[in-house]
Amino acid sequence: MRVKALGMVSGGLDSTLATKVLLDLGVEVEGINFSTGFCVTEHTRNFKSDQDRPTRPHEALRLAAELKFKLHIIDISKDYLPVVTDPKFGYGANLNPCIDCRIFMFKRMRKLMDEMGAQFMFTGEVLGQRPMSQHREALKTIETESGLNGLVLRPLSAQLLDPTIPEIKGWVDRSRLLSLVGRSRKPQMELAREKGLENYPQPAGGCCYLTDPQYAAKLQDIFDHKGKNNLTHEDVLLLKVGRHFRVSPRLKVITGRNERENNFLKSYEKGRHVFEILDFPSAHLLAEMMGDPSAEEALLLASIAARYCDAPKGSAVRVVHRHGDRRETLETCAAEEEKLERWRIG
Image (cartoon, rainbow, N blue to C red; front, side, top):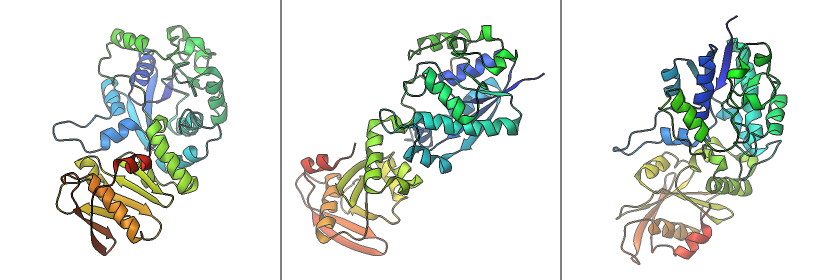
């Protein structure tokens, strides 16, 4: 019979090799690329680039075109936030719920297998590559919790793992699968050369914002001051850009670091207080708070805006404070660097 496998495909080196191995074995492959809202490469690809720097291609689409298999890009971000805010199996070194993340995705894969007529699924996982989710016990836990016992093939490490149903039934030849282990990517890069695969992103790690200490610190600040259950997709987006400051328990500030981020922040002014420098190029500043700022708080926020403008050092600048239809002009000097560092998040 014609065997069909559904693969979790990011387009990175490991998923590229896993897909190629199965295609070479004559397995029909369809790929699934999940969008969680926390992918670093996804944000880099979608965020408007400088004119002299092309945007990044979609790695999974590039791979599907090159190897000629069907790819489905599926947005799971609407249902994904509870995985981040309340993971059953806890967090990794930062706020990465890696085991719960895999279980969530594998459950989706289980449904998609039935819908698309696939006999099993596969991933590019390598035994021992990620400390939280790719050791033997974690791999078994993820399969059990997602209802996929025996139906997850990991071609790159299969010979080091228990035989799966597709191997036992002879749908794939176990002897032609691999026995990669550990965190080094050198064996994968050598295998890619052997198979004539040259067009893949260089493996660098850090593909998820939740593993990044700075992003995790900003997310933890939201948990602490806004509450986990109040986390929104807008919060997730805004944490990816700008400088973030926690001025007080009720007052949070975001400033752009360049023109692209300034333009991005302008799209999220609704419901926030805006502080703009009148006479000099400057960072765009958004302030989040409950209610209105006091006169003292408004002047403080204006001083933060003044710090990130091109006015001569020590000079007073005019700052417009906008909120809805209200508008006022303040005059102040730049905030002290020591205070900014004390307020900085991440």
